[in-house]
Length: 306
Image 1: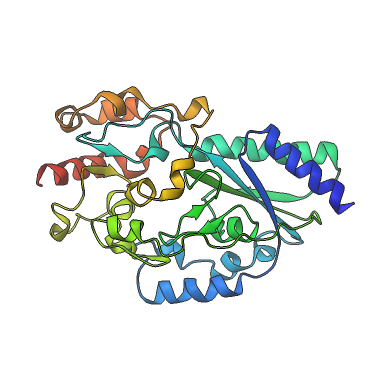
Image 2: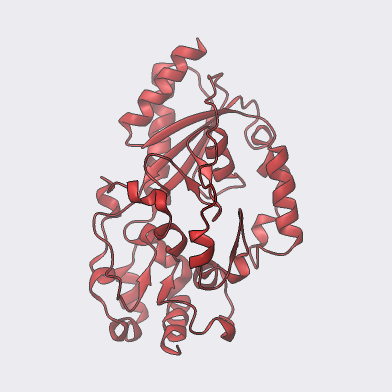
């Protein structure tokens, strides 16, 4: 029965547009828990205090979803058809080009559960996409969709790393997929390319990461990062852009992820002159709203100082 249910799960994933689907047994993440605890003790999570909360749920999906037996890990491609030019004065991470991925993928996870119930019966579970105490990359690795690279992003051998990760924790008994081995080898391109030296092999110090500085950090950006931001105003893709595996990236087919015209066309002067009203209108439903108008203006101002 688990074999036929597994086939149904994989088929639904394809029909809903997910690029990859892997399955892992719902069990404690013991090794990952030790690494997370050490990372937190070193203070490398910066101001992200939420990483410390619900630690027991974060490492054991059965405490988050009682009766859980399987974790269905799903990858959704966001590699764009067109990107900002290399000389863009204000750079935005590719994941934020279009509509907020949380909204897009949550809808698909609801459809996923609905179709599971229609085809299998009384199925219980919850879907998560980067919004709960779920170690999404750890589960994606366990489920065999890829390995965690030295920059700590999940890498898929066929299509690189430009994926959103979603997880469906369910009480279904399913056949787990074997994990894949690490193919980073001796490569250190992501480490060498990081302008703020945030990356050490298989770890990132958030306090030095441009994505953290431009999105998560609520205070002013420390002056010692002046001349190191490389025009990034929201997020950063450097470690992924230099990764050799991303030469296999393929453009996504999701209309909601199409680049907003403002991201494609605005120069730094237009970003500087942006009012809160224009910001709210231009980036309605966008991940960029996460940093808020004040945060975006802070980031633009910091770039101008360089």
